[in-house]
Length: 310
Image 1 (cartoon, rainbow, N blue to C red):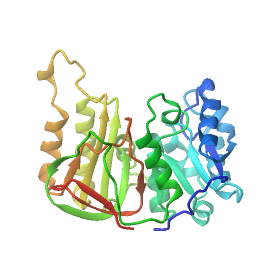
Image 2: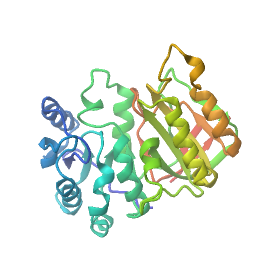
Image 3: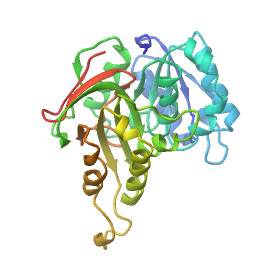
Image 4: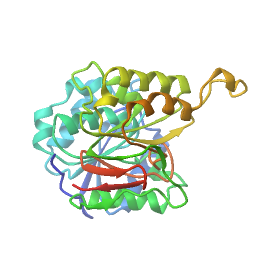
């Protein structure tokens, strides 16, 4: 797996919207936030485009991804926000062009669809990270989150470092043991949506990271069950679970009609028999950790230590 060239102050960031439209009032704030990090910004047309719930039609969004990777003046690519739509552009991506021009590529949630493709088919590391028009401009954007992001994208070659939870939070052991493998995954909904497509996630011998937001517990159950039946959990060397923001019972007044997430994890993940470490500070949450998808990591679910070794 190739590691993209590290970003440095003065580099140019291509800002794109591969999924949903950007609220107009957030665009300049997002640009300012990137410039405050010391980068220049080239703003893609998709950042101000709208096609219903999409940031422009599929052809425009795919063309912009291809163009940003092919442009030698662009040093890194940040997805401005999440939403929906990245899966729709996957057949239109120029994978040979993208593979020939690996760059720092950052985003999360719906962007998981692109992370999987760039890791597996284009053979380079990408970054599961906060995004400019969402976390970058939130009042709660904290030093831990900034430091995690900046360190990852501006020091891409480093190895033998720990991925640590934010201070005051602690990971939880679900299944003890140690595991080593390439880190893959992201948003559970998008990982599951890849199944049966030409871009289906490969978890064989890998560490699978999962998180999600705004899903009923039974939806989490359904998607984990689908991954299990597809062999993706058995194939994995180990599993990391991040934040499950606003994932709960459809009717909180009738808890007997639902199952707690903890119960779902115990019933679906524990029997797989692979090491599982949960409550990683990563996902639709602040503070949040930036993860180097495609790098090799090792983790010990007993000591709750995660180390990037490549």
